[in-house]
Amino acid sequence: MIEIINVSKTFDTYMAVKNISLTIQKGSIYGLIGSNGAGKTTLIKLLAGIYLQEQGTVSIDKEPVFENLNLKEKVFYLPDQPYFLPQYTTRQMGSFYRSFYPNWNEERFKQLAEWFELDLHKKIHSFSKGWQRQAAFILALSAKPETLILDEPMDGLDPVVRKKVKNLLIQDVADREMTILISSHNLREIEDLCDHIGIIHKGEILLEKELDELKADIHKIQVAYKEGMPNHLVKSLDILHTEKRGSVTLLIVRGNEDGIAEQIRKTRPVIFDILPLTLEEIFIYEMGDIGYAIKNIIV
Ligand SMILES: Nc1ncnc2c1ncn2[C@@H]1O[C@H](COP(=O)(O)OP(=O)(O)OP(=O)(O)O)[C@@H](O)[C@H]1O
Image (cartoon, rainbow, N blue to C red; front, side):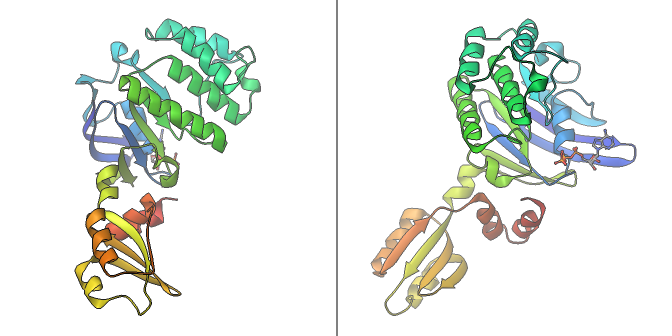
């Protein structure tokens, strides 16, 4: 379990992280979202033990992170610009990590290289940006860390590779309860991966939520009637937003999905669909002012 309690970090006079607290349960995938300069990398570097906070505590499984070598054997940090030793091949980087990470799995290393079709014997610096990131993922996942910290991990990956990476991450979380903190400025990109989301803005956490909790309670519904929508239905539903699109009405409704569907079916609509809501839409409709603020700060 990751615990960040009342943590602040200042550069000269600028406070990049302001009194942040958050907890990430073991086996959870936590998405830290924020615009450029929000403080994501600073928070991540505090968690990776690269920076020391001036205030508060940063711990994993109750152990303080900073200068804790035992803990570092179980944590893998993949920065936004992956670092490799100069002139090294992925094979050589593998040998380097093998000496450092006790859980290193050679079999997996070879399997992943095959799966990504990556040449282990080529110098990493000759790879394109996307291939370098794939090499970094192969190394990170072969180290079998208990905690994986990823800063903007999907940058430069094509959609097919993104899907592969997401599947691998989910598999490791399911198989051995790996904990992941993943930062991104793109809500859409990580919404299908994370079970918790934290929004960071100007060094502060604006909002933190469990995704299932967010998604279970709000629904996008499309209905059409021969003679307009019945008034009693409008009154009985907890409608957050209504939009007319020709003869079809689009509703954003809060409440239990089955209950809402039953009420609508009773009114015999000619069209009735429940559509998926994106996380961005949920933020906007569910959180009013905060939702609109969030819309303006993330893509
Ligand atoms: N080493 C540093 N020295 C001085 N200021 C820094 C340093 N690192 C970060 N900052 C400042 O702290 C703030 C937060 O930066 P940080 O890199 O954590 O943001 P971020 O959310 O990761 O942004 P991005 O999405 O652009 O990578 C910024 O204003 C940045 O200029």
